[in-house]
Length: 578
Image (cartoon, rainbow, N blue to C red; front, side, top):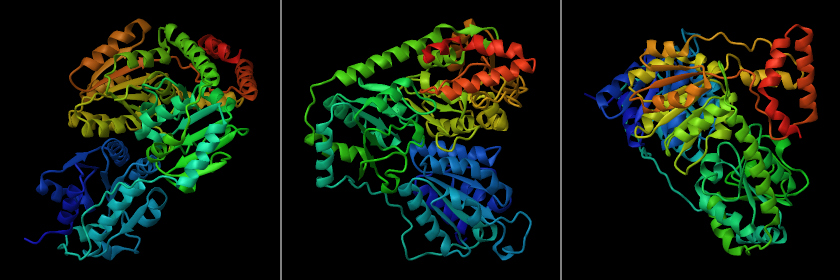
């Protein structure tokens, strides 16, 4: 029997290293599904929602390299989009198979017809639709190359009738290439950078995810310069560990120590970062930026020197040009600030809360202590991100995945699915908000169906906590942020997952220990304080004024009990204002 286009597609995916396809089968995807069944070495992961499949593929791509998801005609395409946006903005190489209506129905406003080129244009580097058997292998090869080397999403449109046609051999390559060039600035540029470094003594290095594979070089440079090292959330797990000069994160979820160090330095060196929050960048010091993508240089800060190269290759060439600095007064002063910040953070842990109002900082701290040295954490956008970023610490083996650039809700649980499938030997822990988990609750069934030992910790504060804080600091009383939640532990048990509910601070450690030790998936429903605040690293007076206005409005509207709860829950933040 002649090989079909669907068989050819599956074989090319297997040859490219794809282990599984996350999808909901049906309609135009049926030929691909059957080709996967007959090929035998690739897994079809039947998710409940294509968005979850795209998130799972994005997580797998970040952990293992290239990954694949698929969606069928019309609604399946639309469901993919949010997860693909997240993967694309995270630099995750994902192949998305968008099967469509039959090609002979194109342009007739047929049932479930969508224009995949328009639909995926903003969340992909490669986006084409094949209409003949000879186009498909060339497009798939080009898509894989684009996804891997541009680090993002490639979409292959595949009409349902095309997938069942006989495959055609082509003259161009169908194999994939993964060259690893050395990319660094010119000798003249490096010399200019070395001279600038040698002229300054108060230096801070800020690392993004582009510095992830350059941990040792960053540490060596910081010690030569007696420089502090700050980092973005995405870079934390790669830069924080075994780093005596680190001063924490900056940004919306960061710490005052990193913000302070960056604003007190005379020279700021940005390494592999496209950090988006310009208000957190200093404006009165010299700034150097190194990035593999030169189009990013200077778009987030007023950069004096912009260099193109990988961080590892650049630092390897730069280090021999740098003289050892003797003055470490700036470093020691900033490390003292960082020590004070960590002392303040500990107060949030020491006060563990009360019945139904467990402090989330305490929960995250205990989780950090009990989780495996090589655990993979996924974190929902919102307050779960805050507690994960501040209290889950790097070991050199841990990894953390979130919707750090796209900032979507509901990412943690489906990303945990991808992490568990791609790293079966490692502990996978999802830090979920109650709002995020509710949004894609159905894919708890996927966890059970594939027997994934994922541990889900629900920070159940019965509200959209980050939105509530956003409203309050702008002077608005929070409204429509409260949530009615089901009993998540009972929902988990109904799905076939071991469920725990924790309402008392004294139960937290044992419950987390039991959940982590359970042989199979487990969900921990922790009733956390809905009034816990995540104060930014630099508290503006207008934010304080906004909070005061918000509290006043609540009092005038008869909500004195909520005002008192907020004040009581956050008395510790007074330290941040002093």
